Length: 502
Ligand SMILES: [Zn+2]
Picture (tube, rainbow, N blue to C red):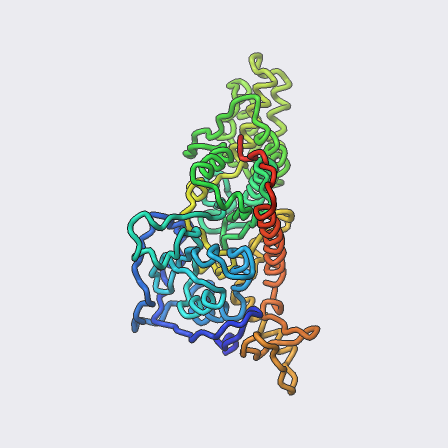
């Protein structure tokens, strides 16, 4: 059994091994196509369970398409999940604080039970409990004013959310009416470009318009991405400010299949103009396609409906109808070409330009699930968990290299465990027993020494660059936290103008 659940360690903290409990497990229902179930938020049932459910003696679980079963999950948590870094990220430091201890975790167990209000005082306890519960995934909620586990002993209203990262959610399902390459849960490089554009537009706006610097983007494991804005100022935003920011970024509203979503005043807001600059470069590839006929007749009609002039539309319809294989980029060029030939006596160039800008925005501007961003208490799936349907790890995405990110090459948990085995087979541990430095735990089988240091299992795999990026992100965040603390402790720091005003 290559992926045995041997008690391996995935990070270099002293963490006691937890006993491996695998109950009767059902994996069905973990593969529905609706990723919105990632966001149960406040409406989610508060399943009152303080202990794991009694194991059921059930039919053996049906094998998942992704190959992920309970043993695989447990091996992943034991060997690969970066608990220590996740702790540092949420704790904003090394010494455990309330930022971590009062943070809500919500666990989805393998039998689909959903446990809200879990919390952990240390990274050790966090890891131990995740290994014990072996959830199929877990979500992260806000930091509360008290320990979420104590909520029952408090009178109503005494436990309040006090901070959480400002979060954003982009999901390709919201692009189903314009993506023609894939449907439902499927994705390809072509439709992923919509997500890439969304990352660029939102990331740029968050930095340039709001001054945020610590924005962690995370692949949702299938067809979307999440942003976690981790700046202290973002984490402390009250809900009304979150709503305001979501509203600022949401310029597409409504959105039935046929109705125009864009309805912007001119002159365009600088954010919209800058977004257009980012989007127009990718518009041709994503929406118009390259050499294929990306625009069907129906889609061409929809595009024409966004143009302001009936005569021009007639001329375009005629031209496109006569050559159905005409590449979409040529169709886009036809709009200007025919407008110039004076097919319409009433069409003015500004109106046409505005209409074309609207089309680019209509087709490519980020379609945010704004509800996710508006409330501090909203739960969002943790980075580095496994998407049960695809088996892929929810890895961070470096927004500076968003173009290079290929969701289809993100490692699956099965890949990763095989990579550890392959590495260990090539690098057998020497006959001499390796002395484990203090605090490194007892689980050394298969681990290796590199430069006098134990090689972590993740370092043997293609997960390494993602964990390395996460570490560097955390390092930047912790540096700011320390500087911020000095500011607060220092003498009368000059009040800064509130960059949140807009
Ligand atoms: Zn596609």
